[in-house]
Image (cartoon, rainbow, N blue to C red; front, top):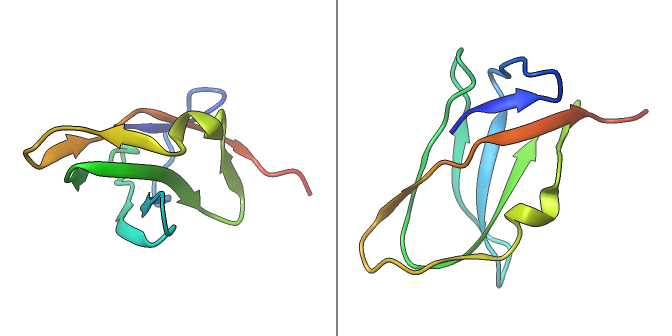
Length: 88
C-alpha cells in the first residue's frame, strides 16, 4: 500500500500500525519507505489500522477499524491510505 496526503503527496517515514481489534494490542508496525510504501503480513482475525505521527491522522479512519481477514493462510495487507495534517 501507499500512504499519501490529501493533495496526493507521498508520505515517507510514517508509522503504520496493525492492532488486534478485540484488545487493541499492536500486532505489527511498519514505517513507510521513501516512496510512501508499506505492507503488513496478517493471519485470520479482526484488525484496525492506525498511523502514529504527531502531524497526521487517517482520513476516513472508520474504514480501517475492526475489519476481518478471513483467509486461512497468511495474507499481505496493504491498503492505500490517505492522511491529513492534524489541526492545532
